[in-house]
Image (cartoon, rainbow, N blue to C red; front, top):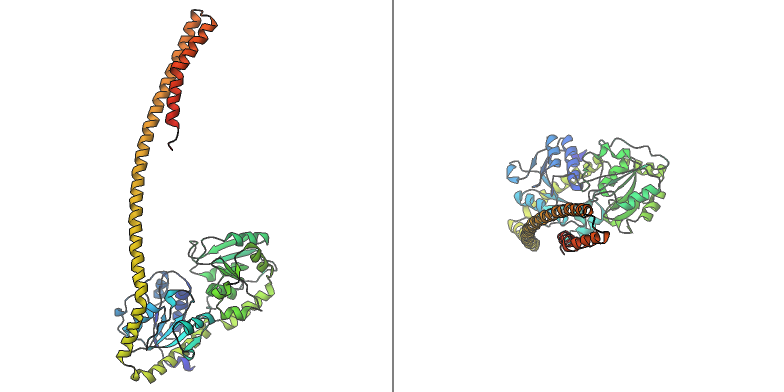
Length: 443
C-alpha cells in the first residue's frame, strides 16, 4: 500500500523507557511493528530500563544521547515535550509529529515549533488539550485511538455466566481497594488479585495473565488489553469509577480512551461497584471483545501512522525552504521561556527538600543520642532495681531467721507481731517504695 512505499528511519522519543506503562508500551509496540515491516525505528530517552532492554533485545537501537546518532532520521515521532524538543533541535532539518497521550501530565504539554507539522491525540480529550493549550489548528490534528497487539493478546477467555475471579490492573493502586474486595465478596467473586507498579507486581507480560480472569478493573490501555482478552472490564482508577464497559457505552468510552474523563461520575464505593458488577453479562462482554479485536488492532494503527509519517514528510518538503533559522530560534526561545518558571520552581523545591532532609538527619541524630542516654539510664535503673531486689530477698531471709529465733525463745504471739511490724515498717516498706520509684515510667 502507498503508506509503505519506502522504508523510513524514524526517531521515536519518550519521557522514559524504564518501567512498562502507557506511552512506553505504545512506543514499544509501534516500534516493533514498524521494524517488522522493514522500517528503521530508533528509540530515545534519558531514562532507560526494562522497556529499553526489551527494545534492544528485539534489535531496535535505543539511545540516551542524540550525539550517538550519525544517521539523520526521515521523521521524528515525538512523545513528551522535553524529549521531542531535544530531538527537534538536534535535527532541525527533520519534520516532527507530536503525540499527546494525556490530559493532566506536564510532560504531555504540546510544544510549538516550526518543524512540528502534525499532532496526534490518542483520544478526544487529548485533542481538546491540543486545541486549547497550545493553539494548534484543528487541521493539524489527527485522533488515533489506542490499540492492542492482537498477536500478543491471542488468548481469549470464555466467560462464565457468573464471574468468579477479578483482577485490579493498575499502576497507581498499592493493594486491592477495600471497596472492590468487599464488593467482589458480596457478589460471590472468590478470587481478587492485583498487578501494577505500586503493588510491587509489575505486569511486563499482561498477555499471559489477563485471560485468567472474568472481570478486570482497569483504565486506558490496560482496559483495552483486558477487553481484547475476553474479560468483562470495569473502568476504574485513582479512587474513581467509570463503570462496566458494554455494547451500549463502548463507542463513547473508546473515544475517551477509557481514561480520566470516564472516571468523573462516581467515587469508588462498594455499593456502586456492586451495581456495576450486577450488570455483568457474559454474552455482551463477548460482543465487546469481538468489536475491540476487529477495530482496535495494532496493525491498523500502524497503517495510519505510516500515512501520517509520509504526509508529514511531503508537507515538510513543501515548506522547508520557506523556514528560516530565525523562526526556529524564536520558537526555541519561547519554549525555554515557558520552561523557566517550572525549572526554577523545581530548583526551589529541590533546595527546600535538601533543607528538610538536613533537618531530618539532625533530628534523627538527636533522637539516637537521646535514645542512647535513655537506654543507659534504663540500664542503671534496672541494675539498681536488681540490687534492691537482692537486698529485699536478703532481708526476707533475715526475717525468717528472726521468726525462727523468736519461736525458739517462745516469745508470746503479740511480741512476734510487734517485732514483725517494726521490721516491715523500718526496712521492707522503704525498700519497696524505692523499687517502685525506679519502675515508674518517666513522664
